[in-house]
Length: 226
Ligand code: MG
Ligand code: ZN
Image 1 (cartoon, rainbow, N blue to C red):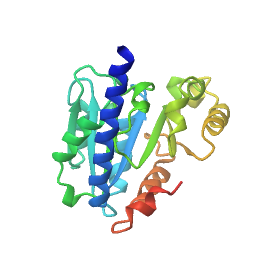
Image 2: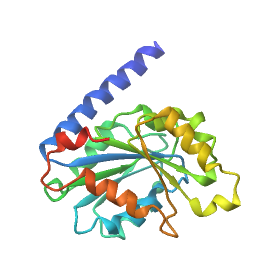
Image 3: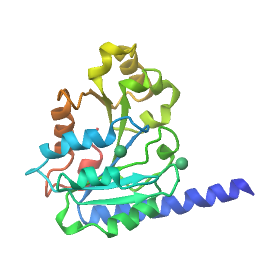
């Protein structure tokens, strides 16, 4: 019985994800799913990167959280269109909730939608939201053992951003080990160490997003880029 329920949930999610992707492709909007544990620095990364996209592309954000609009407020402060998706305690976003979020955005005026998933290194990775690519975030504060412990988060990501590298000297985080483990799990992912406060790697992340989303370019073509 329980297996049937889960299967239905995934089947419904896959259908909604396919609808989202169709809508986004029609509108030539690139969509990125940003995943990582609570406190890994996803919102801070967006705050650092968004100003570097201005003038290159029009960006909107869907903010996933269990409760509060705190992260959406931070994005709105950057003058970026944002919709808060509240899961009311749910530990991941699903494609149906994203569908409702997309319906609230001015899609004619958007080239890139970033979905910040609920802070959780585990189950969000199981749910296709209709995105074209995933970015996985790992913070130095979480520890360099996490890629091996949460491989699915990293397996599906095109880009892995290691955040809070300003803490490297204060922790026993082994950057080489983390990079090796990520490459073993996902040889195709690009890995960028960053520090949002000092600015390390932020331009590289912005450049990756800009190259994914040349305005007027063929979305289909961009999707197959590594
Ligand atoms: Mg956040
Ligand atoms: Zn969940």
